[in-house]
Length: 122
Image 1 (cartoon, rainbow, N blue to C red):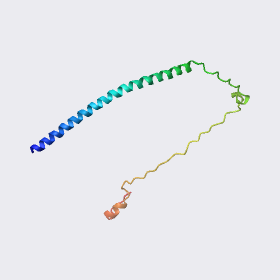
Image 2 (image 1 turned 30 degrees about the vertical axis):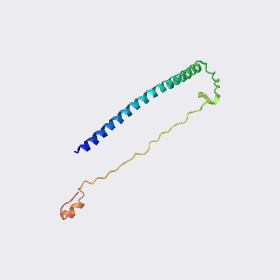
Image 3 (image 1 turned 180 degrees about the horizontal axis):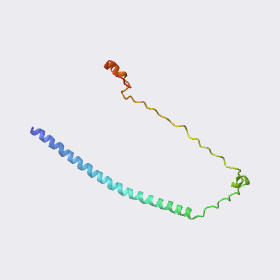
Image 4 (image 1 turned 45 degrees about the vertical axis):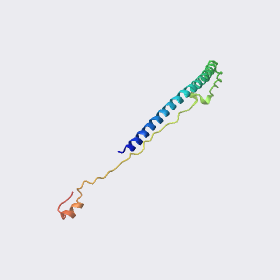
């Protein structure tokens, strides 16, 4: 390698190190500034949540309104007034029969042509 090439590569590496250090310090300083701003947001949100929690507790402490009265059942709706309950008849569905034919190779159709008809394939 030429001395000029070594110098150029070393200069590029040094520039990359300087730029990386600058980016890291800039990121850290942004994080610190963001943390300070976030603390104020967190405190404001905590106050808002505590106010909402207090309103929920007040609503829970209130007595709920009275329920309306239940009307009395008429004679037709009473259980003894019904003549008979409907009869339920269950009919089973017909059975599903699946027939599978498998070729066992004993029907003799292929052997007669190849063996010259030499045997019964009963």
